[in-house]
Image (cartoon, rainbow, N blue to C red; front, top):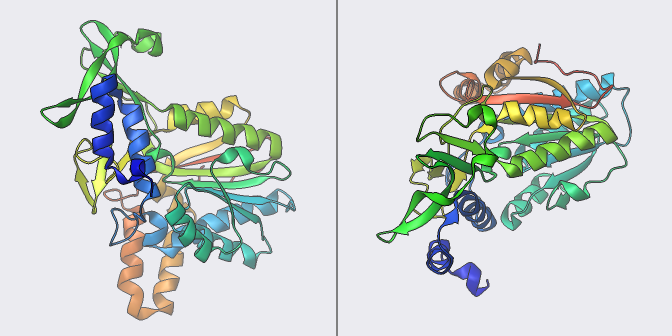
Length: 352
């Protein structure tokens, strides 16, 4: 490990702020998450958080069935690429690909993953997958079946705050040896849509250039190559204001300014903007619905009951996992599923 990697990120940030002044929240979040994901497996009971594929195999299975259905109605193109952004331990892909194979859908598998630790787990779960640092070098010779589950929320956000002098970028400074948020000194009014510039003093607006870039590439690839995509994450479907940045460590919320690089930093996804960006590049929007509603429309209850009957000793675990995915007070309402398709490709179930 290099000296720069060995140095706690908090110390690196303090030195940077001391010499160059406050850093943007976007830079803070981006570098903190890059260090965080590069140095650990954050998933599971021994990690910091758990995602839907780790809660229940039904999640990945239903995604696999959804993709199979669209692929069949698109006349079974061959070859086809299965692409997953941020595949975690590869659990979702493993479950989805197992279902796909039953219907003779055996796609080439591509994982967009930057963490060496997680790549090792993904290779064990899905041997033969091809790894990529980003979407740019995914092959362009065939349609894509793309899934991004809890990927966009970890991309850095830019925050702007309305002050008495106008809009300013939210920055991270050091006060009393601790990191603290403050308004920057440079005007940023031109970065705020004219319709929102007169919001009350103290209003915070979030935007994610990284999310926008990813969604633009997905939309463009769908338009050029054909295919379909599922974007699954927590976020909102109506314009909103306020900070949504949070940090999670050992399955509990912690101070996002406390230990950069040691906790998972996330922000809510603006599904309204993501939809418009993908559409502007030529993709067709299929809909955005709550995760619980989407899974129920796809038959999550029937599948969970079948698994419970097949393994009675696991019934409580299977049904509690199902409940966690669909209940409104757990993941069912906060998490959204957005579907996209190439022009001329069929719509998928669950969005009507």
